[in-house]
Amino acid sequence: MKKMLVCNQKMFLTHDEAIILEDEMRNVDLTSVNLIVCPSYLNLDVFKNYNLGAQDAFYEDKGAFTGKVSAYDLSLVGVKYVIVGHSEIRGNDTDDIINKKVKAILRNSMTPILCVGETKIDRELRRTSEVIKRQLKLGLKDVILENSQEVVIAYEPCWAIGSGKHPDETSLEDAVLYIKNILKQINISNYKIIYGGSIGKYTTELLSNKLVDGYLIGSSSVVLDEFKMIIKCIK
Ligand code: PGA
Image (cartoon, rainbow, N blue to C red; front, top):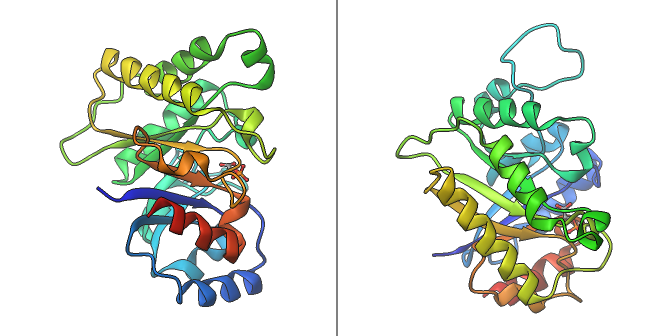
């Protein structure tokens, strides 16, 4: 099965820059990966010919929620995946809110990409397993998947995001096996597990890992050379 490559473009691109990148991406051979592009809300339309993802979604369908964009609305403009619980947002969202978002994403026939991972302090205090367990159990509380539905779990250690650091292969595999074990305990059997955190052209060691189903890339998703190199390494 092709590896999933989720491009989290964060707030890196203006509308004009997104148009330029989309144009350049047309010349890249993407057939070897299952590419999902998560632009800013304003740039969703620019990437409409790709598998579209959003970077977050609100759980209510409609109403007086200033500044929010609902999962419902996103599903109507062709979004298929939504990142939820990203560490750059987790500070504002409790596990309960993340759980509501996961359910809203599934209710609107999209796939949640649930980010989990420990902070630097958690890691130093050897609390990685405890944190991952809590984030998975609360984030997926009472989630029952229908046959065609799946969840994507992105293991993203916070200390690895945007830092140029990443776990060694053994710690990554330990985390993936642990996540599988927790998902089994909570009866989630339709899932993919991907890794995110400082994947770039200088940190390609993890790109041939057999246990992960793909990668979530941030800053290197908007730098064409890095993006191309990542695709080449995944091949
Ligand atoms: P990074 O971001 O690849 O720039 O570290 C990954 C992420 O935030 O998901």
